[in-house]
Image 1 (spheres, rainbow, N blue to C red):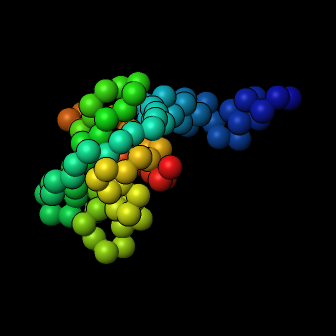
Image 2: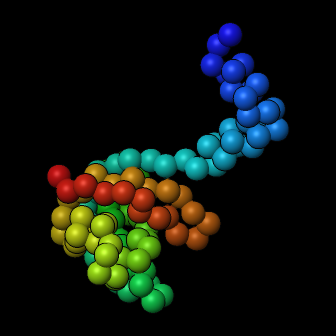
Length: 101
């Protein structure tokens, strides 16, 4: 019995279908970006303007970037080159992960 058959048997057909749709909806992409600027957005969020070779100019937000416990705030400072993982959103993209290059 292969893995997909075991998964359907263990989780049930309906749950497996929902999980596969959830994974398709969350389409992240990774790219190298130059962070051009940052601005405050709402209370603790920040809006970053990025330039990528593949996607051009992107405006993306980082949730809770203004808080002292933010892990991403130090990775996405202006005029830095970073590998970013971006999740598309309805209005703005969201930076889900970043690492300095």
